[in-house]
Length: 195
Image (tube, rainbow, N blue to C red; front, side, top):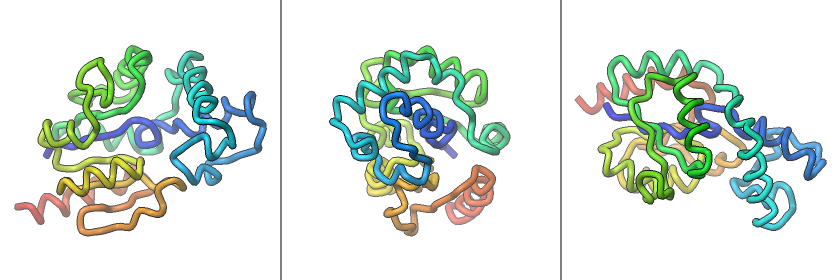
């Protein structure tokens, strides 16, 4: 089975650290549950440009290299790599590709391939296009638009629960999880249904 895996808020807890970082710009006293939109300008009550600048400052700070992996992600990824091909498909900016690859190598060396969507580094394509090109059977992501696009193409999706994606309903090919430990049984069930 070929499994596509997002990085931010799927493998690593970006919003926790980004929220701490953003307090020097917007002292709003926010926690993870306050991030109910994928668009950070709506959360921080600022322009899109201002939000993008904060994210860029965050990336430039080097903090991305110290991102904490989500609970159970390291162990589950290692186990999944035994019988599956793992492809990280990320929308991270190209100017942090070295930090991204170093972080993945440090925590998730079992991932077979890393592809950057909407980036001139490798593909310049959207995640659903990459998933189709790579023959992805299952996509694990947190972004509502990605889940929608990928599931519409017939690819089974596992959505990592987050406040900004709770409006997405589970369907025959979209399942919600709150912890990486839930992934192996879902994939085992899916393999049985396919065979």
